[in-house]
Image (cartoon, rainbow, N blue to C red; front, side, top):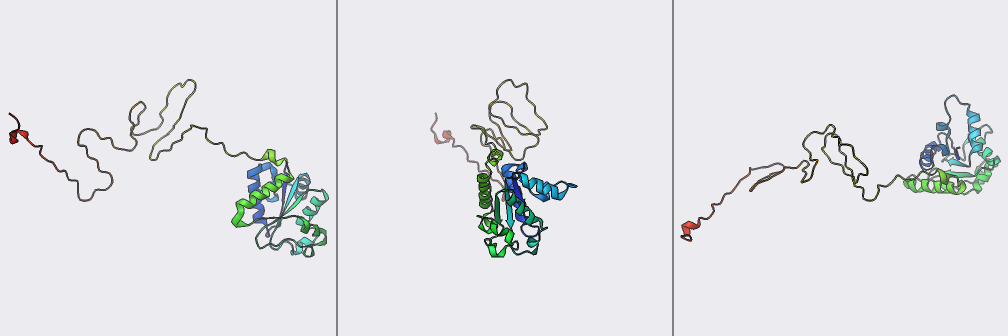
Length: 246
């Protein structure tokens, strides 16, 4: 069931309607929100779909754009924005005006058609682009208060890694790199697929993209070398020449 019905006028609030649709579906699930441009399938009977989903909804968001209150269409009886709001009123469905921009003022009775003057008495929510995350969260919280069933539909946060789990990503590897921690049960075998270059599967030191040096006096230069590499050799003092040995 679509608990939330989004009412809006194309060209004067449709961008916020799409934003609300996406944010609320992300929070409460795809089936919780109805927006005609997305929810009505091609070939469906438009008036029937609108009124059916509206009457089954639990809350109606009315998106109020900058020109919403003064538009000529709102004064026509066949205007669908108007019809949806009046139908919600007749069905006693909670209506929440959402002011779509900081420039949108609170609704005033004298600026509205008489049939919609009651909208000015409703507490409205406000959306501001520079506080979008906060405002969308507040609108979602307000809907939770109006429609407790949304609490069951609210999407859980992504699972956090279990304690003690270590994930590692290495750069410059070819093929599949898998790191696991503790294994329970039997491990039937080990598979190495598409790996190139040396790698170590047993105990001892492991070297990844690093030189291995051994022996006395090993020299390693990393990066660019300008001016050459010089070795200075010093003769070991011969104690026999000092007469210190018999």
